[in-house]
Length: 447
Image (cartoon, rainbow, N blue to C red; front, side, top):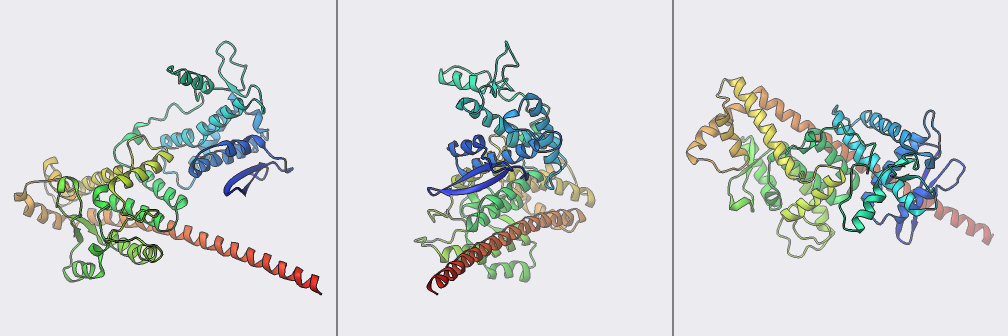
């Protein structure tokens, strides 16, 4: 945050509140009161706090250095461009300007419009900060029909949404985010959100669920049924070391329409699951009473019951909604991503080997990987073709890329854990210092 504006967290009545102050220590009551009044969950508050940080940085940069109550349509346009430049200069930017514009719309512009809408409704901070008057378009500093929408909704009328957020980017084609399959950027966005917004067993389990769906194409119903005994050290050693298999084939306890087709887990995915069992799952189980634990990998950290497919879909739907993904595009998009990547991989390998690259031939292999039913008479053909293609440079390259993606997420998680440990140690040290000072004071008084 800019040095001109500071944000201070205050714990009151078992809740966290945030106070904004200028360089002179004067409280900015608008943003402060808005967050107090915001009856939302902590994740939504984090979104608004992030938008405030960007707004204050803009207002205190370059030629501006103006009060937050001086925001107007002209500055909103400049703020839009400022946010885009900040987003595109972020290390997580992946070169897609349309996605960057959509991020600016959902994470910064809309929250700031909503904030000034709240300011206008209070009637105490500024009488004409936001509104919409076609007859006199200069009667409000920020043009928006948010108040009119509120009135229309209260009358059960259909609101006119054309002027709600006039300065949003309109030239960003949402089709790039409406595809069924998630992009690499979206997967990274999803993982980073989980790393930063969750902790403990819940964080590692959600990351592993995303990894399994991305790397095996499993459905949520199958993910919910995996058990730790299916990934025991004995099984891993037998299949990879003794039988020299390239994959560990697992038949889910639950599958769509009772399907009993196996799902293939490559070694890096299996090792991630094994690490999760030994470090996160076992530690979690040692600290809670799960009752009759049946060996599931993924449990609800509150009820200690196995996560169901519905639980998984709901959790990730809430996360992707927070991230601004289109409605209907959530955890299942990772299965679609797996399908798209597999199709490209098979096609490249077929061309490299001189095999048939026809849609029919590729589809037969993909059906097996996606556990779609296919003719049993073709199984030998598919297996033989797959074994040969796994030796190609195309397959090896795709495997290496996937492993690097997993390593990147693991390193981000480890970094976050180290920061949390350091913060905990610092907090403990501060408490010790306070206790030492207290003891010194007592000794001084006694002497």
